[in-house]
Image 1 (cartoon, rainbow, N blue to C red):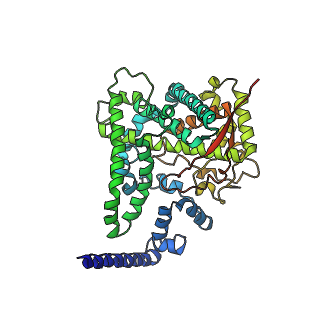
Image 2 (cartoon, one colour):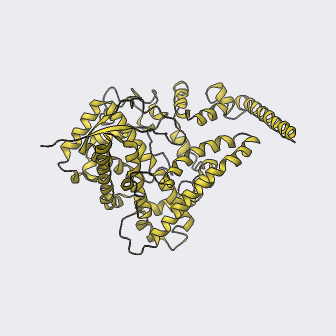
Image 3 (cartoon, rainbow, N blue to C red):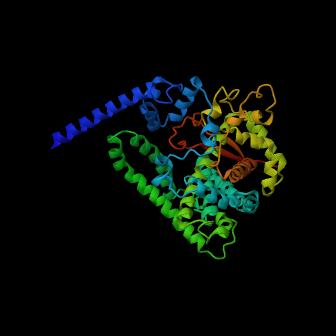
Length: 446
C-alpha cells in the first residue's frame, strides 16, 4: 500500500511538471497576452512569482522587474475603462478570507448600495463628530508611550501604533475599544488576524498547483478557515452587542448606518453588517500602523525632515489640546511627509519619480520645482483607484495626522542602535514589521 501511495505521488508530481511545461509553451507562444514584456521565466510559468510570494520577497522583486519592464495600469485595471468593473478574484477576496458580503467583494449592484449607506459614516461631518474620540485615544497612546519609556528606557513604537489603531477602529466599528492601550498587549483575536493574512498568500499559491495544489490547500487551509471564521464570528458578536444598545450616543459607524436599517433593499442585512465589521477591522488598523511606523523610521533616518516637521507642529499648537482637524489640515509639511510614504512598485519607480527611494516631502510641497516637475503624480493612488477605492480615506488621513502630530508635539524621538535596517522587511499580504525601538525625550518648553 505504501508503494502504491508512493507511485501515485510520483505520478502526480510528474503530471504537475508536464502541466507547467505545456502551460509555459502556451503562455509564451499562443496566449493572447504573450506580447506583453517581462522576464521569460515569469512569462513561462507562475512558479517564480509564487516562490517569491512564499518567501515574502515578491514586493521587492516586482520593483526590480519593473525597473526593466516599466508600465502603469492603475486606470486600466482599477477604473472602468470598458464601462464595467473587473471583478475581484474571489480566490483571494471571497470565501473564508474576507467574506462575500462586504463592501470590498459585493456584486456591483450590492456594492453601490453598501457604498451609499456607509458614505455618511466617513464624511467630513462624521469626522468632525468623531474627532474627540480619536483625540482621546491619541492622548492615551502618548500616556502609554511615556509609561513604557520611563519603565524600560525605550519603546517598540510599532506596538503602540497598532494598539491605538485597533482601539480606534474597534470603537468606531463596535462602539467599544479592545483596550489594547490600557492592557499594553495584543488579544488573541488580533494575533489571529495577523497570522491569517499570511495564510491567505500560502493558500493562493497552493491553489495554482494542479491536482496536488487543491489537495495540499485542503489540508493546510484548515487553520486559515478556523482563524478567518473566528475573526468574522468575533466581529459579528461585537456588532450584535453594539446594535442592541438603544441609547448609544457615540458617533460611530453604525450611528450613521442605522438610519437605513430595517429596509433590506436599502439597508444592510445581518450578514453584510458582520462581513463589513470584520473587513473594517482588517483594513483600517494594520495599514494605519504601517504608515505611522514607516513614517517614524524615515523621519528618524532623515534629521532635516524631522526638524522641519517637529518645528511646524510645535510652532502651530501652543497646547496639545489645540491639535484638531482644522489645524492639522493647515500643516503642509505634515501632509507632505505622510503622502511621501508610498506603496511599493509604481510609487517608487525611477520612471515615475525623481530620487524615487528618498524621503523628500518637498516633492509634494513644490511640484513645480525643476527637480520634481516631471514626477508622475497620477500614479500615486495609496488608497486604490476606481469605484472600489478606500471609503475610509478621510478617516485614515485624520488618524495619521493626529497620532503623528500628538507624538511629535510631546516627544523628541531617537532611534535605538540596531534599528538602521528596520525597513528591510518581508511582505506577504502586509509588511511583516519587526519591533522599531525608539527612545523618547519629553519636549522642554518655556
